[in-house]
Image (cartoon, rainbow, N blue to C red; front, side, top):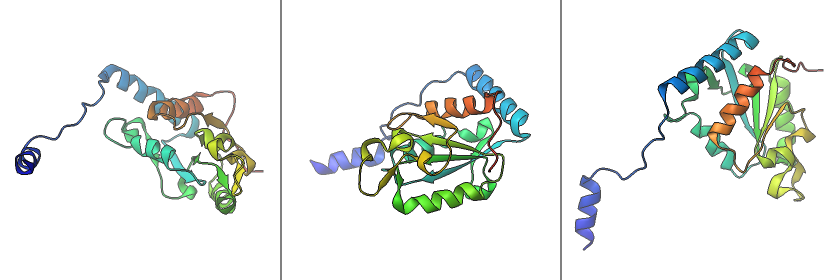
Length: 179
């Protein structure tokens, strides 16, 4: 009984859901908007550094989904970088924990001016479900100034892209310079 199932699963095609249908025109329009906004504001593409302040990894999964073939962040001229020294945007996830406060402050200080800070998810906004815990100091705004909030538990990749686009297209304010 087990062997026929095993053989069928090993030799058959994998059962996966189909990728969501996205029109080429919509993708091209979004690419043009993001690339134009990034070039106008920064003169180049946008570099993002994700900083986990003590999360459950739900928001990190959604940030990683931005890099998969479905969303493909690179085609929009946005990319994740390994160091805050190369970043324009710090995307903070999770509640600010006592253990991560100093690391977050160092990452913020290492990010060159001009810079933006984005709080991703409910926990980064105010501590979320972890608020009031003995090791939680609250949201990321308790340690660094936050420019954009993307709510959700966790926010979908589409919400993250829309937030980054709104950040780039905001014409009233320029990125923050360190005091």
